[in-house]
Length: 294
Ligand code: NDP
View 1 (cartoon, rainbow, N blue to C red):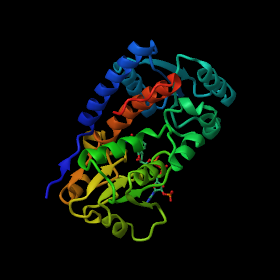
View 2: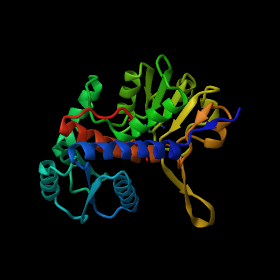
View 3: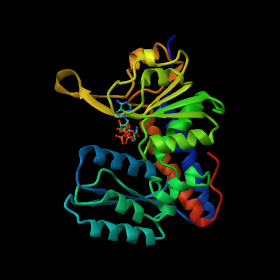
View 4: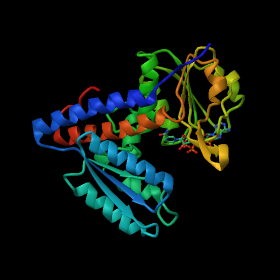
């Protein structure tokens, strides 16, 4: 069997076009232009790339992007003061503080300062709690993207066995909550899970969010399963360069799976699309208008 490749880039592009249409309709109806503030502290090269990509996606969708680049030695109090100004700014509907933050800053304290209504990353405990209790929430972008990719293969996920490897607050836990909301039977695996390959072989839907290059082997996958690879790992490539690989051994896995996301070009582009989706949702909520069903 050769798996269907789930084209995250094309699915994300399609979603971004729909978001742009909905943003234009909101602006026409209310005069409001959704705005996203992106805060970057320091000059981590990977973070700089993410921030540039997010800002461009926002502008491409007809929204406003407010970029704040602060030096690496910025004190925590100064960053918190900026977040408070953004909380109060009516032109800003979404706030995103790029992680990781430098060591002098307590990331949790900063993230907990963000107005939950502007928390487009969905990391605030209020949003995590709302998601866990089935209330409307701003949901972390990577898990949102993962579920949309799974639904591109299986429009209805109800009753499916889903296995999520990883239990971070950013990916694994919110993903498990979303899958429960879709009526999957969910197993969350982590570093203490016994016989991980056997657990993975139960999955109709396998999500790998571990951060270990090509850890999931072909014989961990149930034939015909759908595999969503969240991992982004840099490994040595040809001619002294690095290349990106996921948490799944792609060649082996695609010989067994029914459908699989590539790395790059799978979950990554969907995460970006979901950042702008959340910005649109936050702007709609602020205006008291229903968010479009995209
Ligand atoms: P974390 O490091 O926060 O979490 C990793 C999780 O994997 C933990 O729950 C850990 O278990 C588990 N784990 C580690 N080793 C093993 C193992 N040997 N067997 C089973 N489980 C294990 O990572 P994130 O959730 O932030 O990110 C995961 C991956 O996704 C990374 O590669 C990251 O780069 C990528 N990522 C990609 C994004 C995208 O847009 N495509 C966005 C965000 C992340 P335990 O809790 O027991 O320690």
